[in-house]
Image (spheres, rainbow, N blue to C red):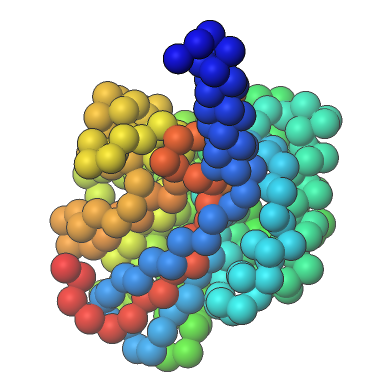
Length: 267
């Protein structure tokens, strides 16, 4: 094989890989997640969006259409919706949120490390609240979905307090935590569900092995993404809509989760 053929082959391979990574990084994939709990009376539908990191979603209209078809009872934003609190990145995230709010579905937000360690969190929160998005910072809300009473509590990322968390046995007790490890480290067991993000699913995954590295969860992490029975409840880790440092994803496309909770055994 001559050098010209080798160069052509390598060039085509590079183009193909570049196209694949671009699709993985900027085209949101819908995940359908089915969860069970014996207390649930009828179906509870939740859309989870995490770790946007001010990303530009190329198929945003398609994403919104699928969320509308799923018809969630509420939407949860589990942190790092902005990448850093610069004016440009906040505006990119607000563009996404303004389009999301056109669905007119109740939406709740918790802050992640990128919001809390960067500047302009107060401004970002004020703009979200103008859109009707509820910010839960170590605070909770209760509301009904059909015959279910939802006890939804959101923690801060760096400072977590539970004084306002009042779980009840006959409620569906949900904790939103940007990093599920935080709740595990706090040794909580009084929840039915934890919804979190932060890990990005590792961004680069290998078949069978899964994530190679995940922030805060370490090398070959156990809680990289997906559903994990934990104590008496379930942890679900969403792999996120954005990227950290570089737009690099492999076998781990950016995405969002349409979650159905029905009656049944936890495991």
